[in-house]
Length: 369
Ligand SMILES: [Zn+2]
Image 1 (tube, rainbow, N blue to C red):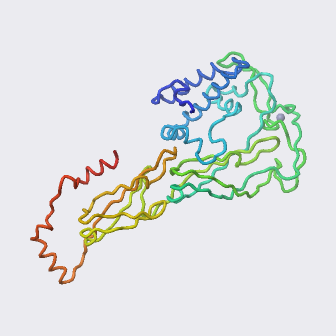
Image 2: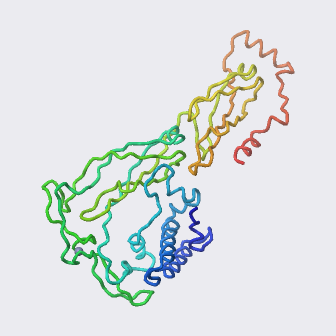
Image 3: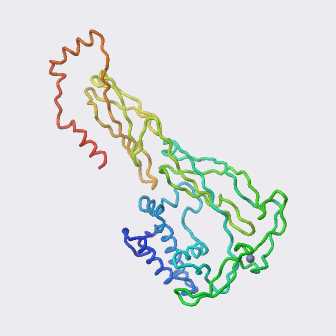
């Protein structure tokens, strides 16, 4: 079980942005690798704190985390890597924001070039309610930047392949040697050697690729999923960026979604209401047959347990709420008119609501409880 991000930073759920930042600074200094050499436990704490901060400092990610917990980032359906596992480079690149500039690289002496990471790509995937309810695998075409066949890179002479140029600065941790990215190679430690004619100045070309995306059941409009390594490549000895997939939910013709529950408006005739009837409802995972008892009242809500949208966390499903509406005929022929005129004085047609015929407001209250 993954530890709660708030617990890791030692703040309450209501902590302000400033409090979260302050708490993280404290943890980052306490567990910093330079202060805890050869201490894997401290390194683990350092990474956990960075991961917690990365989420809690971003209002969008924080909101998602508050609602869905770690699942919001880990993805249930085979997403490589999900959110977890920030590497040290990611963490240090965050530090400019926390401690002010000039704090980029640590580890005086230069641990070699950091592998450049290609840029992330973003796409939108439109899903029907049925696809959301059942989970789906989508194949999307993307144009990725990749290294051209035949391209070669050589060691950068400005930084001798280190990717960084070192300088000494004063920081809140005292005098520290810090590094800035090499201006010649952009940090990769390598520069272009030979490239084919069709490649750009960095030796890159655009390539069509079909990426298969497994979307778990229960995703929500606006949610972002990450497919690791399917973004753009970077030149030289690098790792590709990620493909960020934003979920868009298409409107359904009959069903309205409300969290994990679905609502369906069912219209029945006056005669069906009086005599009782069976109806097929087109639910998200197939037809459901429901039986309406004779004498059913308009406004009745039938709850079909588990016929809604599955929880993204994998804990059960919502319900399908069928709202019964009795359709009143707008025109009548002579005999029908006669029939209803007779009914006006007939006690069988006079409303006698019982306790069990709850008011509309009580039903709504029930629905949200
Ligand atoms: Zn360089």
